Image (cartoon, rainbow, N blue to C red; front, side, top):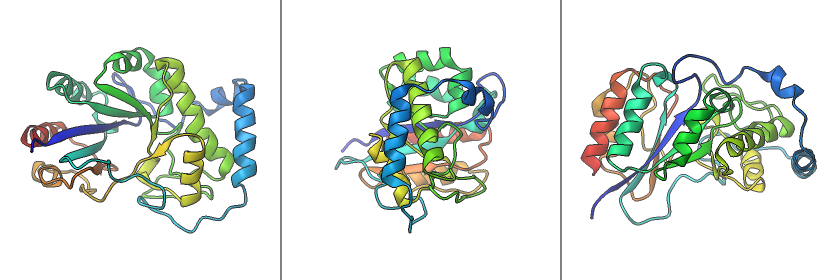
Length: 258
């Protein structure tokens, strides 16, 4: 049976032609008036979930989707592409996907949306690409301020709501489509936070465990993670320092899969 590849790419910080961080511009966000429906939804979520204590913390907590519903040899590859920005590697990967007609889900954080409206519109207009939510400030998905792998988590229900919903609306304002999928910064969730994601109408994604996490991934490691996928596996190669050769390794793995 032919193996199919679905790609998930995380444009998490920086500009295509420059630098920048998703944690910036908080004062500008605070000065923007909140729509009435946004305030009402926040009140509903806060009333429903405030005071609930989480008992799980990780990448595969209850409610996180880690497998695609398929019997085909499909692997969803998540790539934290922040270090590719400004080096031409992001454009190289996108061009390859377009040339090979490979569909991709692109996870975008808040500042990337703010600084790359024109690029985002162009990507969203391509039927190969689906735009998804990486959070306003790319924080771990927590209702109690937990951190993971050096990434701070949202401190309470209200901050988590803003992290998810504000960025979803940013994406919708540019693309005209509200994103369906959400992936937390560092990939970590607690189970109460995941229930909030679902209550907002989105689906939290995590890794099924297929995929290396260490720094400076080599070509063989990428190939090993992808060439023998379990049907429907989601393999997120995130939280790594991506060197210039990483995209070449991913491209080689995708060619082998096909």
